[in-house]
Length: 367
Image (cartoon, rainbow, N blue to C red; front, top):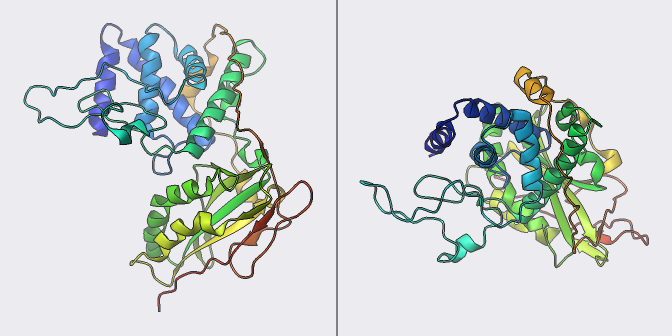
């Protein structure tokens, strides 16, 4: 299906303007690199994957057929920083009837299908049957995508006005400086084969954990970062995943156990789990984050990307800042990194922090 969509996109761009394909590919490479640097590139974690990014870039290219890659990059960020989701991104009109010789199949239709109407960030595939390629996107992921689109839009406007250089878009991210509290999830395997199987299972279920931590009732917002930090230690293989947590002003006491219970139940009940497979969770203060999250902040140099950055642009109007009616949240902090296991613990109960209960999270052992 991915190959079909990719070929369809190229065919849509090639008619009448062969150089448009080159500009599309160059812009797409820059967008993908930007997404990786800022922890936004992963379909399995509920963000966007290669096909999703390609459709978004193609949407901009189709409407600006004569624009250079650098101009397209600026237009891309300005467009989707101001996109009114869940309004769908469509490259072509909805095709309800199948082509000749093709069996009729259900298509994405939010008016007829309730499940389709619940999708938060519809990016519709252009070929039959039209489907939402980004149905995995959840509320926390969409929030991060919106925030990063808006930051990139502001940066690109500064770049075209001569205040900054294009490379600033790819010089790392501020995710691990923006929040006070982070949940660190460590996936552990004693040997490479066990780790590979265990990591695949945990990664595929990580969206359950992210969705569980997003709780308006409790007053918790989750901000996931789409990257695993892999390390080889003497004790085995470890891969760490981070989710920033913010708490509403009304949150006086927070118990995290119910929010992570579904995720733990799924992984603990996996029949393929062995004694060498483990998982730990820690609440970590920003000041106590491990040093490896700050390593290799700058994106590697790319000659094609340099071509994008060096092309002059025409400045566009800077988008207005978005107002978040629910932005009654604050960052709170724990005193030290604490595992979500053992005795009940409480976070700082000062006037600026809610009391947070870390209930015991029991691990199922294979006997």
